[in-house]
Image: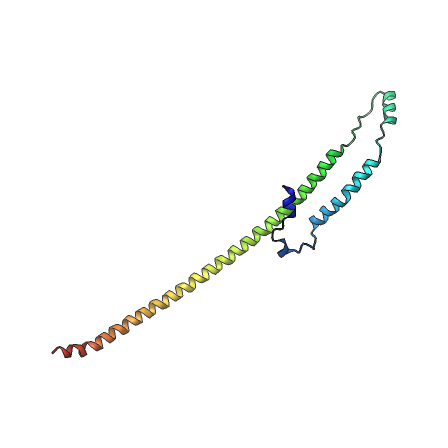
Amino acid sequence: MSEPARNASFHDTVSRPSTQSGPLRDWLAAMRATAPEGRQAEAEVPPPVAPQAFESKTSGWAPRLVVPNEKTEAQDDEVAELIAENMMLKAKLRLEADRRDELQLLLAQEVRELRAHIGDEIAKMEDLRGERDLWKARCEALMQPLFSGQTR
């Protein structure tokens, strides 16, 4: 699941070019760069078991030495990568949510302005209809004597 999410870009090119690095990406890149070196250095150092085993037999008690498991360290590295990826995705999600909120505010303002404009246009149209009806009534009043005189 982490590979597609790591490779996908969610409109990140708009806010920050992919060539520009952020603090989380720098940290993740540094962690990846040092992880193979650290594993090789640990593999070169042999665990000192023999001298302390002899001392523990003579003194009677010694703390138990636990050799770190490489598998656990690899899992820790993977967990750290997943945490970093999760943080990056959460930051992107916050940015997208902020953008969505800004767009919704802009759209709401545009809708309000359009409704106000439509209301103004409807009011003007009602005024024109009223004026048209007034002139129509005047014309009918002026024409009535002309047509009533023909019927006599």
